[in-house]
Image (tube, rainbow, N blue to C red; front, side, top):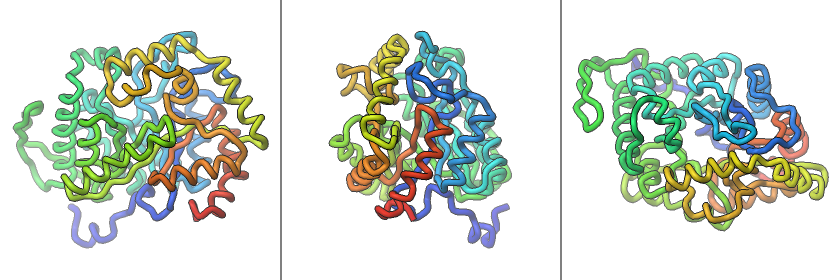
Amino acid sequence: MNTPQAQATRPVHPLLNDQKLKLGVFGMNCSNGLLISEAQTTFEMTWQQALQIVTKADQMGFEIALPLGRWRGFGGKTNFNGTSFETYTFAAALAAATKNIGVFATSHVSTVHPVVAAKQAATIDHVSDGRFGINLVMGWFRPEMEMFGGSMREHDMRYAYGDEWLDIVQRIWSTEGAFNYDGQFFQLKGVQGDPKPLQERPVLINAGTSGAGMDFAAKNVDFSFASVDKVENIKKFMAVKDIAATKYQRRIGVCASALVIARDSEDEACAVYQSILEHGDWEAAKNMMAVLGIESQSFNERLAKSQEKFVAGYGTNALVGTPGQIVEQLQVYSNEGLEGVVLYFLDYVKELDYFDRKVMPLLREAGLRH
């Protein structure tokens, strides 16, 4: 039972700390990470290397280790993201092997029953001593959803389902004893779950940017993750804060993801970016874009644009340049209102070390980290 004394000493999740710009590492649990390319790299999707990557990020003081949630690949020469680790068990293993970083599962709500998810989350929260969080995903890749034997719901209905799913999970985390649930999607009897999480609740994030997605995030999560394709578009993602404040009387943060290519010279960094494109798996990129256009409203505005941003980072804006230029770009992100960025790299192990030596000191000098 969570006694008043236990509640008073509940741990604070790393992502809720006072760093001006929170940092994370992203996508290290899937083959090719977030780059749809055969560019040269030592990155391998193995447990040993994933642990090395996250351990390094933990030592660097990063707040979040965020995996991709994938059940199958996108075809092409690389079958992009076709090999992956399941994210709840991945988070549990990382929780036992790290000390300070927040460990997350990326959970497709339609593939995990809420009673199971609530128990898994509470377990990992105890293993991590209160460092667990969930990235809530409604599901947008139809072939993945069909693997589970059901048809995919209409876009906005997926968020209605997710809202009910999360309501059940949070009631399990907070309710002593059993309860019944009679909803549109779930009819459950005698629901209960102990132990409760160590945190008041695990930190919740979501990356929906459609109207329904923003409303879901504004109502339910701690951080909305924006798919920033251009710096000048950041402001539109801040609307979720206004929705949260005016409609739901709550506060929410906004973060983003970004490919980082930091090198000693700008020319060298640009050459690496060009190599990623030259070795791109364009068939897999086209497959991803086709699915996004049909199944998701988060990316509609950019589907007519070049495929380059998909090959080099899931359609988001890449940060390319010298360490000083990377910090300048992150400063702009912060100035525009972003509170954190989860990073991915062509070569995670080598580039995290470089980022630690060359970029982190400049971030501290700029007041973005302490």
